Amino acid sequence: MLTRLPKVLMAAVPGCLLLSVAMIALCASQSRARSIAAFCSTIPGKELRTGVSQPAGRQSTLEPQSYKIRIDFREPLRATVQAILTFPDGRLFTHEHAGGYEWSDFIKDIQATREDGSVIPIQSLGPGQWGIKASKDEAVRLSYDVDLSFAEEMREGTQRGGQFFGNSLYIVNRSLFVMSNAVGPRHVEFVVPPGFQIATPWHAVTPSGYQARDNSELADNFTVIGSFPSFKIAEGDFHLDMVMPGGTQATQALIEPVVRSVLHEYIRIFPNTPDFHVLMAVFRGVEINGEGYRDSAALTYPEQIEMGNRVLWASYLAHELFHHWNGDLIAGSDEGDDFGTTEWFAEGGTEYIANRTVVRAGIIDRSEYIRKMETNIGMYEYWTWAAPFRGTSIQNAGAKTALPMPPGMIAKTYNRAGVYNGGWVASFCLDTKIQTDTQGKKGLEDVFRLMFAKFGITGKQWKPQDLVRVSSEVAGTDLSSFFRKYIADANPLPVQEYLANAGFDGLILDYGGEANVTPTANPNRLAQEIREHLWAKAW
Ligand SMILES: [Zn+2]
Image (cartoon, rainbow, N blue to C red):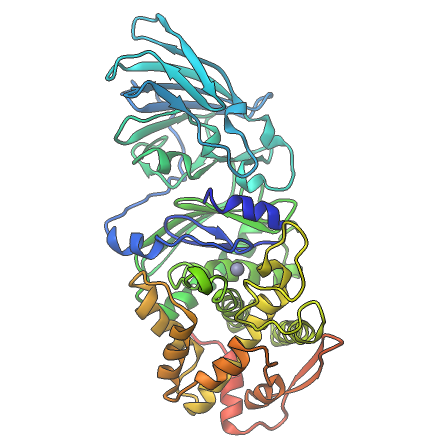
């Protein structure tokens, strides 16, 4: 996570994130977490329980490696923390600077005392680092305040720090904890006003008490406190807790059925999805962006979530959720020459399935779906035509650019129309080709399933030639010339031909970025089948 953040900041584009078990990567970033599938399959017993609970507010005696955190929403916004910790190496520290936040800036009035109340001096060793002269096993009482006023400002990047909504608080745990290197679990108890809910991915021990296995689980997650809508979904072994700080019951009523339909479809595609638990916060920020943590993920959107604009946010949610499978579990290699070469499939393939899913579920209608087709085709066609992008293949679009990039930009952003829209069009053409070659018996979905079996489950990263092999195996015919010509080399895809094979008429002007797509009046049986497969309800 930490290594990716600076890239994300530099990219400064509407981002999307990759869901994962261990962490989540923004789509705008080019390197991704790689230990995810392995983590998933080697720790089958992992049981995270998100507690959205009503704390009883009882007092308890603190054992070593325990924190008691008092938060209410009175001004100034702050948390008061009392901890009992041991310091085996005489060091205490906050999480290192991340996401534009220097966490130690928020720690106020830090004080350490012995059991008998005598003060133990603390020396600053630099930002977020202190030394303490305590014996190895001595239980030290630590007290400090966390100034949370930074969360009151609505600005870019709050998903990386915190955002206050008046009646609820989304707070990245990195701000809350001064930690020690003691081994073993950490216990956390929240003391909050009656009626406050608490959402965290930690294991709930009591209504307001939680256990985190280590400092990473403690700090590399977020907590949502206060009053906010929430819902839980379990589809197969996929467990999602969604919280909407700042949202209303109306927000929940719109989002929940969308997420339910989408996850239902994804588990239908991937019935063998390994056990996965995630806490997801969705809230209104100043940008479309996302941030992934160890067992939690935050998505922000700039518009009010309404029925009238769900053509935008429903696909966005569906896209982000599909990244759990395509991008995280099915993860491409970024080693050496492979760098960026699988981005088109991670992004375009994900958007293609996301769009198909929301139309199949009836979340958007067929004319809205056709507009998405037209936008993807139009953007891709212009990208193949326009001088700043010309000569770049879809496969290279994630890493190379035709002209030098502006400072701070990454290829995936520069070539967004090649990676996302081009990836969408390539996925559509591949899907159509496989269905045509197999007389409708197989399609891109089967490619995803086989990729999942060969890479998603095994934790192996795939390379471009792997997708060629898997697609050929599914199609029952050698597809290497398709991949060489249209994916590896910069030849524009014959979109009109594939549209016709899928039961659509296409009028395309590459230099105008224009695509007009209409359903063919009387398609042949196979074309009609391929078209129905795109948007007919599948469950
Ligand atoms: Zn994405």
